[in-house]
Amino acid sequence: MLDIYKFDESILGADTPDPLRYAFPQKKSAHAGGMASPIPPDQKVEILSRLYDQQGQKSAKRCLYIHIPFCRVRCTFCNFFQNAASRKLVDDYFEALMIEIAQKAAQPWTQTGLFHAVYIGGGTPTDLSAEQVERLGKAIRRSFPLSTDCEITLEGRINRFSDEMFERSLEGGFNRYSFGIQSFNTKVRRSAKRLDDREDVMARVASLSATQQAPIIVDLLYGLPYQTEEVFEQDLNDFMATGAHGLDLYQLVVGGSAPMINMVEKGRIPAPATTAEKAAMYKIGSDFMAKHHLTQLSVNHWTRDNRERSQYNSLAKTYAEVLPIGCGAGGNIGGFGMMNHRTLESYMNAIKSGDSTVVMLTKQHFLEPLFAALKSGFDHGVVSKIALPDFNGQSSFEFLRPLFEVWQQRGLAQVEDDYLVLTLAGRFWTVSLAQAAIQVLQQTFQQTTAVESAVSL
Ligand SMILES: C[S@@+](CC[C@H](N)C(=O)[O-])C[C@H]1O[C@@H](n2cnc3c(N)ncnc32)[C@H](O)[C@@H]1O
Ligand code: SF4
Image (cartoon, rainbow, N blue to C red):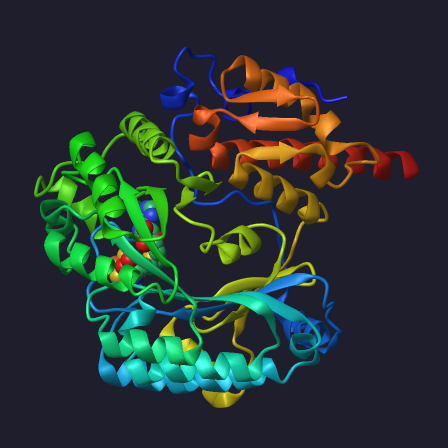
């Protein structure tokens, strides 16, 4: 039995009349996750070759992630920036990437499974040349077994995304485009060092969407400096006006070395929105989508039609294996997490010397399949009993029910027989809730195994 009252508000959420704004102090990380154990470096190569030598399962959905670690300009809010793009650096990197693609494609594990979603992310993949984008698409289709309806996404921005690049990327096989817009508002964009003004961005997104060649997805942030509620509402209206097919709404979380922190400290720009202000903006966004009858695919993703499926996001953020390729790419295979070299120099050296591109290997937690199922449910706003593997020989949903009931009392969810349905507040705090459920299971598991080993001594 779960003794829920030994947990504090970081798990249960605050008892407040306004859970949307105040259930938790702030969003701590982008994604929820379980604890993993690092593999000692001397075992890395042997484990990796065992993983790549094994046979895959055609029926298990898997993804491919390829990272392009360059941007022409660093945006002030971004924690993902790695390297400033220069033609020579990008060209050399691209050739290294082609080598890694060939290496990974040659593995038995790769050829015996089926990839259902491919994502070229960054950084800014659209800072490759048009020719490179086409070559990359063709190399992927030639080298990996892809499902017939495989989603192949090119991420990037509309700056310098020419007609030639669009046509050549379609020729390469890309069938979904995800553009970071962040805000359409020119003042917000300039203060964040985004490259084009509102009218240019809107016109380009509209013309790409109007071709109906592939779903065009727009990322918007909420909480940027100068992005008031009125500006955000205009951003949402602008998205509708462009005719783009899908929308991601991300809460701004500034951390690490993002330049914005320093600019705010020096008084050069106003502070970004507080958590409570961002919660109010999430409600505005969510209400707006409902008013315009967009379909909700996850807590922060909406689609206007049934062409957009957001396969990569729903698979990779949850239970699917992900093969990572490129500098700074991360993924997981066979219960192990892997992270490729993060600096360009060490990645290029690994490719030149024929060493493994993986710099860090971890063993995922024993309960990872359960954690993944939970993350999937929280990401969709509904956790269903039947989708969760058992925990300690009993239904995980029943084990967690006391926690779910506290969340219900605190306005974060409704418990309906076999489903936990998140409220608007719960959807805003979904990562905190998923993390809390994972933490409760992890702690209980640790205590149970400690008791069992004490008894067997
Ligand atoms: C890694 S970026 C790459 C996209 C592309 N380079 C661009 O400039 O839009 C992917 C998405 O992450 C989101 N993102 C970046 N910085 C963020 C932050 N500080 N907080 C929340 N989301 C962020 C943005 O919405 C962005 O579109
Ligand atoms: S938002 Fe995109 S372009 Fe801007 S720094 Fe981050 S990854 Fe680069």
